Length: 245
Image (tube, rainbow, N blue to C red):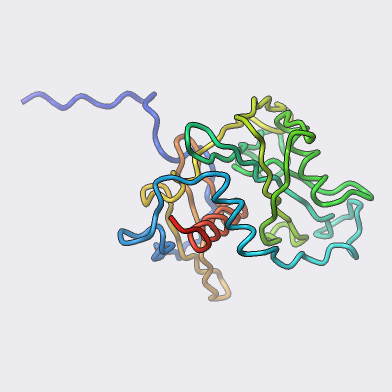
């Protein structure tokens, strides 16, 4: 009997070049309710659905960033940051823009994230997100409508808050990645993120014995994890909990 033909390496596959620093002790978690076989997963999500969900939920508390220095300081003291979750409707589905950070970046290289970065002196949070989106992928701030925001969060490496803003454009944007910061810019349908084959949860045990849930989205060619995955989980929870499908 002849051996089965092997699949070409060039075929698309889920997951990407991102390095996941798992601790020695970890296990698979139960996952989000919408990611389980009996979960409530819509087959279509529109920008109008997201807008309605944001209105129903209301604005989350804003992290107290006014007292933080808006200058680069040594060590862990860094200015707050803002990112833009940019949405648009395409062929009946709401899609969002993601970027893969360039290998030239000093930190988080190759990681998938929303366009964004740290505030400049005297800058508002929402404008920082819009400015960075223009610098990284060529999004014109004048064409973006900010319709809400998600909860501010922080990471182990950067304790200063990161605030995600949800913005909308009227058509599919033409993305022009800045090679100094972005090696790939792409978009993905929100409904794809709810697919059980895409989302998973891991429970990591740290040296102090504490356990933490880590979310992962296995896209074609990339793995989204860390702060961006946490933002996506909040966005999906918001849509599923506050929208009547």
